[in-house]
Structure formats: structure tokens, C-alpha cells
Image (cartoon, rainbow, N blue to C red; front, side):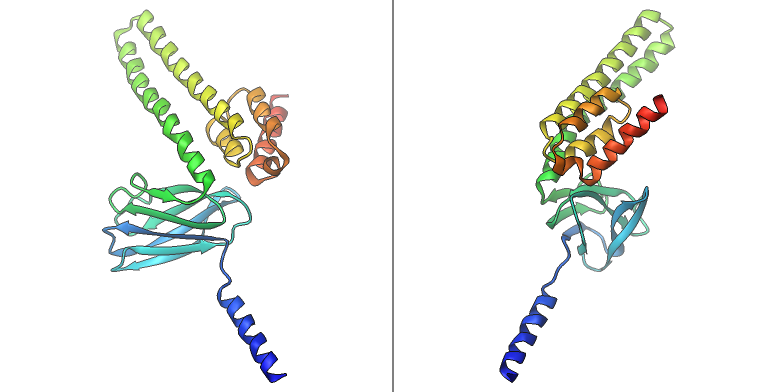
Length: 232
């Protein structure tokens, strides 16, 4: 009896000691000496820290939190020298590894872990081209306005409008092609929230139950309903 109880206590202790949070984020921030890094999530439109790790001569960190479903989370650095940039990533249950530098905290971030994060990176790799083109076209519009030439002004505006349309079409097609992933409703909300409501309806309409009932699926549905109500 005593032996059996002893074995049960060992098993219980082992299960408690190995119990882990749903998400673990490890990584490094090159060149950092002191500071604190935070794992954050949006709760009721506010960024809230759910875990933190202090640097004290070391450059590595480990953060964790419970995660019921895939969700976009943020890593924030507060070290008295940074401008409080954020690293955004699409978190899933499991282990993520994020490595970056102090000087270019968000720009140098290399994230590994999770299929949805990879999908989001694939999207923004192409979307970035449209955003860069938009900046160039904005300069062209300003230059055209200086000349006062109506033809140049109209042409610059037309080019800018066409670039925006191409980005929206790319985003819509990306969401439709990734309907089985939580990235679809998230991208719709984050990138084309002001698109014609019929396109958002189309995206939501193809989502399987597992995605439409997810965090961003519900938010997309609520957003569509709100827009329809305000329009009417």
C-alpha cells in the first residue's frame, strides 16, 4: 500500500512539473544588455501583457501563456533605448522561436513555428510590394499636383487607384485560397476592412465552421453585421 502510494505521488509530481502552457516563445535579442521583453495580446481593444522576461547581461528570453486557439500576439521590448516597436506573429499552440536585434527590433525579426505564421508571412511578402508602390505613387501625385497639369494629376490618381485595387484583389484571393486557416478572416479584417461589403461577405461565406466560429471568424461576422447596420 505504501509502495503504491509512493508511486502515485511520483507520477502526480511528475505530471505537475511537466505541465506547460499552450504557447512557449523562446529567442534572442542581439546586443541587448538590460531591459524587459513582454508577450502581449489584445483584450477589449487594449494590448495587455501576459508574460515578461528580464534581460540582465544575457540576450535570451523565454515567454509563455495559455492559448485556446490561434491568435495574433505581440512581442514588445522596453529597454530605455528602443522606440517600443512590436513584433507581431500568429501564435499557435506549441513552441515559437523569435530572433532579432536591438537596433532593428521589428525589422530584423526572424520567426519560426506555426503554419499560420508562415501563411501570414507569405501574404505580407507580396502585400509589401503594393505598399511600397503606393508610397512611390504618392510622391508622383504630389509632383503632379505641383505642376498643375490636370492630365498628370489624373494619371497619377488613376495609377494609385489601380495599385490599391490590385492589392485588394490579391488580398481577397489570398483569403479565399486560405479559407481553412484562421489567417483568412484576420487578413480580411486587418487589410481590407473598408472594401465593398460584398467581398467581405464572400470571404466569410466560404469559411468552414471551424474557422467561422474562431476568434477572427466571429470578429469578421460581427464587423460585417455592424457595417450593414450602419449603411442601412
